[in-house]
Image (cartoon, rainbow, N blue to C red; front, side, top):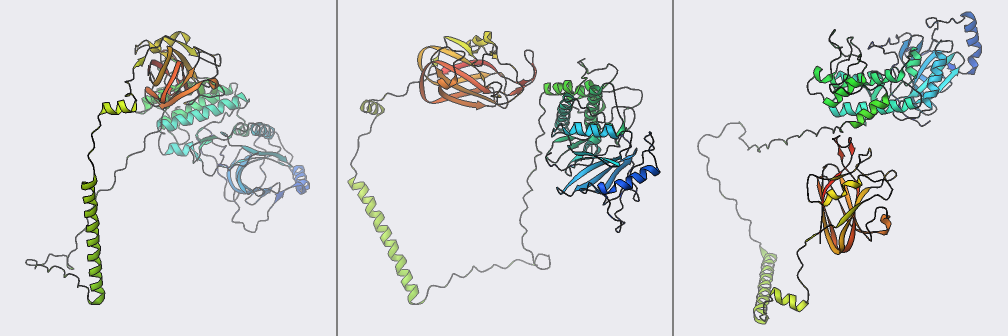
Amino acid sequence: MAERSTSAVDVARESGQEPQTAQAEQATADAKAGAPERDTGHEDTQHSEEESEAEPPTGGAESATPPELHSGHKLARRYRLEECLTRLDGFSSWRAVDEKLRRAVGVHLLPSEHPRAREVLAAARSTALLSDPRFVQILDAVEDNDLVYVVHEWLPDATELTTLLAAGPLEAHEAYEMVRHVSQAMAAAHRAGLSHLRLNPGSVLRTSTGQYRIRGLAVNAALRGVTTEDPARADTEAIGALLYASLTQRWPYEDDAYGLSGLPKGVGLLPPDQVRAGVHRGLSELSVRALANEGATASRQEPPCTTPAELAAAVDELPRIRPPEPAYTAPPEYQAPAFPQNPYGRPPAGPTPPQAPPAPPPPLQGRTGRALKWGVSGLLIVALGLGSWQLADTFLDKSPEKPKSDSTIDKGSGEKAAATPKQLPVKDAAEYYPDGTPQHTDQVGFTYDGKGDTYWRTKSYADGPDMNPAFKKGVGITYDLGSEKNLSTASIDMLYPGDHTTVTLYATDSLTSSAPLSGMKKIADNSTSGSKVTIKAKKPVKARYVVMWITAMPYAAKDGFSGAGYKQAITDVTFMG
């Protein structure tokens, strides 16, 4: 597996309670400098068998005694334990060092006779096969003599969502990014047959680059023995609770949990925008749709989301929430320089006597001074003489010329003045779709009918602004100008502004819908973030059939004709020549 640094994993948090940290005498024996380093290699087999004979294992979780471990203990002659993070229910979690690869790792430890040891191993090995970078990766899962341990990556630069919420609710863009990353990641996990079942603010991490990572997939639930009949619904409700807490800094249930206050008792589930002012309306409704709330849904009565995939699709339908603009910092005010004062800080008594002007520098003395004076004088005389000669030559030798009128220039050169461009009428048009998949062929005529309220629209796509060439290279229309015309400019009015629309014009030889672009002549192209684009050719191009080819479209919200996504609509096209 690829090497990654990892973050602390706290699998003991449940219902917001802080885990029982290891006691100094049990978890960290760093003070015992003389304690010998123990290695759980194969040479300890005899010692383990003697212990098992002295204390036969029982079936209960309470009787599964964790091995006596300390800081400096080494597993498989490779993983050196550094600090105990959790000791609970017969297992413990540690921060450790992989001495072979010289990196920090996290380790879950439990005795092999623990009733959940087999489930933990199976969950860890299944999660390791997922290899999704949005999850904290499992690096090793081993049963070695009397121990079962799971090694996972460590993210030193990551921050728990619990810590982020302790400082206040997330702003709308950050909450949107969190629910988008987490729902998409959990949808991928469920497609692979894996569930989390312990998804809470302590298992969601934000890295220093702003990416969100999920830890404890399947393993945390196996360590705690958590199961459910509907894992998809459980994980979806957990994501809804995370979004609710991110928007309100409140836990969406009556009990306090994870350092957050619960909702008032007896009032039920309140939408986030009723708990805190200024909450984004779309995210508020989305969190309520994801939570299990006895049939209640969002204010628009949209159906609840019951799987992570449904929740991820609902997030994608929201208009994209942009990050806030950086705050403007005013430059510091101009500070006038302080004027010098007298040594005692008081103005001098009486009027200030006038100061004598500075004495001029003494004249140059001696032979050197006289030589410099004569040299400078000579240079000035030469410069004046040259200037006078050039001025006289200009006035005496220059012969008068007859002014040339514009008409003379035109007659002498034989060239005509440039004609004023005029609009080229469109005789016919057809949709251009070389991949065989049209958009709306019945709406093409709306693009040159001269009406601003009719248009031809494209379908809505998930990729953008640039279209995905592997899926669809572009969309377009072929126009017939009636005969060959000198085309110089095209103006295209569009319905949706935004980042960004790219249009290219091609000259072709027929009113085609499927001819390849490689056989056409490119006229010009342009991009715009507004609702109009003008395309100018370097010089007029003779063409009868012109293809308008769109390869990038802005993101637009859901409207009465299509869903949210990357799309465009053409209201009017004008050709000039």
